[in-house]
Figure (cartoon, rainbow, N blue to C red):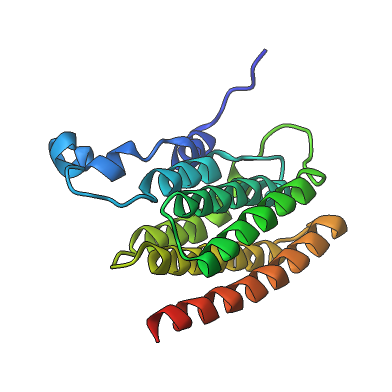
Length: 207
């Protein structure tokens, strides 16, 4: 027999699982969806929104397992953003940086998959990540401007900043397994280093 969800769990599930199509089209405000997305949203839009939906839907067994699953979706999204850039014929320097980013994100996914836990999902423990996920999504999708490479760099900086914030949130939660906590700290340090590389590349383009 399936366990019945109470009203609080249903609310939590809706917050995390509901697709963001209405947010993207403006249909929730009574507008015509075709009109709301008639302008050019840029080459990264589909990858960004797919990552956003995947992260919100990645619900695990605990706060630590939620972080692992959401971070897998986060890194898969970062690799997807970088592949989009590679299709835009960037300079050799930026191409090399994007390819490095793809490899780093894919390597991180393989490491995170080792930490996945089995068991019943715990929706409420995922709620602590809603704010940083939304903040990251708003920051990345809010990046526009001339130069696809410059836009990608700025988006990836916000992408890494989001992972750092999610990691800080998890480290404040009780009962995080030691192996997960160690992985969180390692990943956070790597994200800080990657951000510095991206910042230097951005400054070089804007100089």
